[in-house]
Image (cartoon, rainbow, N blue to C red; front, side):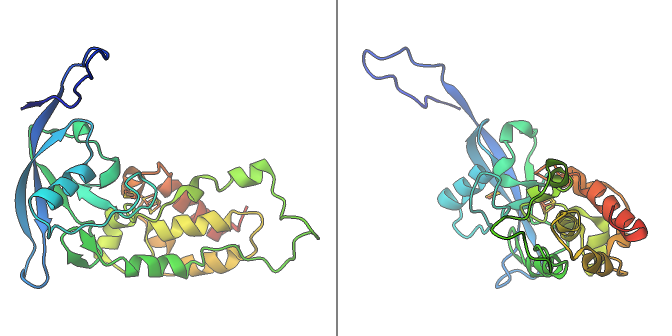
Length: 256
Ligand code: SF4
Ligand code: FES
């Protein structure tokens, strides 16, 4: 199907070439706890443009076909971390996944992230994820007062030491792509370790040893099997596996 999306005003510039719309099939794993005993797959055909994202397709389905379709989203621009989901078997943010980057000759499968309790359709219970996050004390702790009338000074090199792990948006794409987390919900998971790393390697923080003790637990960093699923899944490009390795080294050799 071809749609003309912009009519040129009389006397205005020549109209641009029409933008092609096409039909794409989304197969979504649905679950309504009030009705379903098991999740079920449901097909939806939607007219989309190549520049649309999976989030746009989900909105279109919800607004035009089935208002009961349930998913989380807030910013729609890759910042809030609320719309991580499995798209064609890979964890991604729906708002950062362009339809043109997927094979639209085949249906696109969309389902909730794995390893966390399924609540409805694409929504999981994030409480266990945030409990692990809170356990690593992800906030700056210092017993030493800052210099009078001054901020805590930090060199550019010291700031760079943990720059990568400051980018985390707590979307859970890493943790819910980890096979250890799937089989053992007790594992802290990559995201909690990333957020511990952010403070362990901050030169202004004085609670590194506390966090390293917490992560030296049997459900801590040693459960990591270095599968790199977490790094592949991270929409912020954080070197998650490397951050976990650095925390392991800090436990063995002390904070560098
Ligand atoms: S490390 Fe990446 S994938 Fe994991 S929660 Fe943070 S932003 Fe999401
Ligand atoms: S809706 Fe905020 S990251 Fe996608």
